[in-house]
Length: 171
Image (tube, rainbow, N blue to C red; front, top):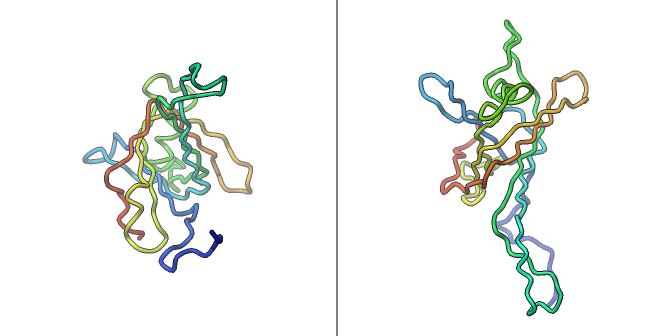
C-alpha cells in the first residue's frame, strides 16, 4: 500500500487552542453553574492508564498488563484577571486560588470540564468533552508583566466522558 499523507478534503488539523475549560462555581447567583476559565492556553489533558500485572505462564516471560482504570491531569496556562476597583480575582481565578495554599480536604478540590471548542462553527467534537474533580496546583509563570499561572488539576477518581459537548459557539 502506498502511503498518502494528504488529508481528506473535508478534514482539517486539530488546534491546541480549540479547547475550553469550565469550573464549577458553587457560589454563582442565583444558581451554581459552570463558568468558563478565560484566557487559557497550552491546554493539555492527559489520560494515564492504571495497570495491573496480568502476566501468566502463557506470556512466556513477556510483560502483560491490563488497564484497570484511568487517572487524569489537566494542565494549562492562564492569565489571572482582577476586578479593577478591588484587585480581587474574578470568579474563575478566585475558585482556583481558593483551592491551594491553606486549603485542606474538600476545600482543595474543584470540579472542571474540558472540551473541544472549534475556532469556527458551533459544533464541538461530540466525543471530546470530559468532566472530573481534582486537586489544584498553581505556579507563577515568569512571562513578562502579566500575572500568568501554570495550573495543573490532578484528578481524584476517573474523568467522565460527557454525552453532550457543552460548546455552543464563540462570542
